[in-house]
Image: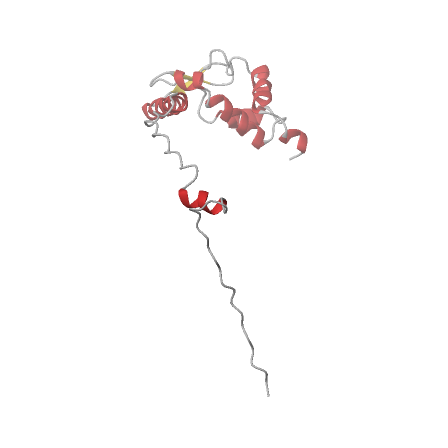
Length: 159
């Protein structure tokens, strides 16, 4: 596959299909497509690779408008817009489940999580303790003097 074909967006690929077969591919009023329509397209159109065709059909059949039209018993259409089968109960149920899942996902993104009660602000730390003041003021008569003894280590001379 060349880099030019890999760069085509599903929208560009879909425009290619809707230009060739407007009766089947209408984004404003999508109709359920015939099962196996990709075989018909492959026979009539050699311009798209298998990957491009798959991506274009995937983009078209996953649109919310398309899924909403998949009602049980609705007529499926071929490339010329002629009836070619009906939507099964299982296909209709799958489409409705996908739409419900998308709706739930959007609602969870839009509704913010309830915030917990704000915690009480932390108690301020005492600015200076009495010991700290005493250490810093050596002239004060109440000051605490801390003496440190330095340890020295002696080595015994080796004989």
